Length: 74
Image 1 (cartoon, rainbow, N blue to C red):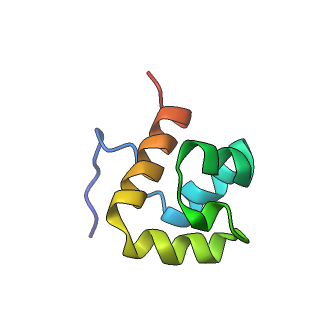
Image 2: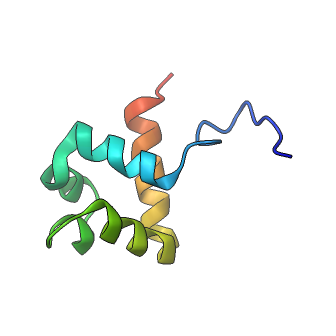
């Protein structure tokens, strides 16, 4: 059973949803400008980005921080 986490804005949001929304908002090029990782520049796809982000915590942290900054200010 999962508990409600009122102060965690990412609770219940999948990494796939985060990446998809950021790509819809910024596009791949805009996302790469904000977070310099090759998976956003060289033949980018949701699948390849998820594979990289699941293995690379520092990059995932940056993606999650950008998501929060973009969609949860205030």
